[in-house]
Image 1 (cartoon, rainbow, N blue to C red):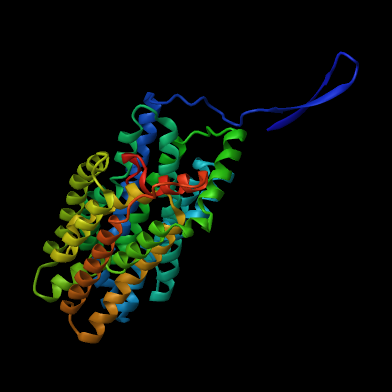
Image 2 (cartoon, helix red, strand yellow; image 1 turned 180 degrees about the horizontal axis):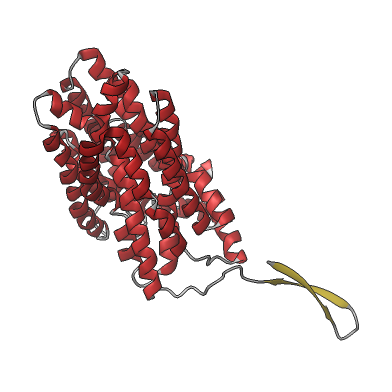
Length: 418
C-alpha cells in the first residue's frame, strides 16, 4: 500500500513524500525448489483441464444419442468449451491483476467443479451449453491462463524449460486424460463421467494454493499498463499481423473439427469405440513429441517460423487428421503468444469449426464430405501463411511503437509456446 510521510527541510518547511510498500507476502526466489513446485502444479492443472476439454469427442456420441438434437447443435457444446480460453482471456487477465493468481486459479477450479456437477444432471442440451460450454470454459481459462502468467515469475535461468513443460498441457492432457475419460464413460456413462471429472478437477483447487502472492504495487501498475497496451487495437495497422490473423482464422475454422467428430465418424464406418478413442492418445503423444522439436527450430535465427507453421498446416490438411496439432500450434504461438486480438479472433473461428462440420454431416448424411472440407480449408490457410512468410521485415521502422509491434509478431522466446 502507499503511505504519506512528512519530512521537515532545513528552512522549516514540510514536504510530503510518498512511500510505496510491497504487497508481497513472501519473497520470490527464482529457480528455487519452490519454483519447481509451482511449475509442477501448473503442469498438472493444465493436463487435467486441457485433457477434459479436448477429450469431449469421446462423449459426443453419447450426447447425440441422449438428446437427439443433431450433430451441429450437439457439437456446439464442445465448441463453446474450446473457445473459452481465448475469449475470456481479457477478463481473466484483469481479474488476475486485481485479485492475484491464487484467488483467480482457485475460483476457476471451483467454477469448473460446479459446472461439471451441473452438467451431469442436465436434462437438455441448452443447459449443457451454459454449464459445460460457458461456465466450464470460463473456469478452465482461469486455471490455464494463470499458469502462463505466474510460472515465468518464478524462473530466470530455467524459464524456457518451465514454460515448455506447462505448454505441454494440451498434448499431455489428450495423452493422459483421454483414456481416463473413456474408462469412466465405459463404466459410469456420460453423466457419471462428468461427475467423476468434477472430482478429478477438484485437485486443481489444492494446487492453486502454491501460487504465493508475489506482486508489488509498483509491479502491478506496470503490468496493468503493459496489459492495456497489449490490447491496444492499434496493432491492427500492421499488415503482417492482420494477414496472419486472417490466415489463423481460416485454419481454425477447421482445425478442431476432427477432435470432436472423430469417434462418431469411426463408429459409423465400423470401428469399435475403444479403437477410436485411442486416436486421442496418439494425437496427444504426437503433440508432446513435436512441440519441443519445433520450439527448438524456432530458436534458429535463419528459420522462418511462418514457413514452419505453413508446412505443418499443409501436412495436417493433407492427412486430414490432427497429428500435427502440436507442430503448427507450436510455431504459431511462438509468433503470437499473448496477443489478445489474435486469440479472440481464432477462438471465435475455432468455436464455429465443429458445429460447421456437424451441419455438413447432417445435410449430407456422411462424414466423408466433412473431412474433405476440413482438409481443403486447412490447405487454404497453409497457402495464405506461406504467402505471408514471403513478406519481408520493413527496412526501417519509423517509431518505437513500430519496433515493439514487429517484435510482438516475430521475436518471442521459445518458451512462449502454447
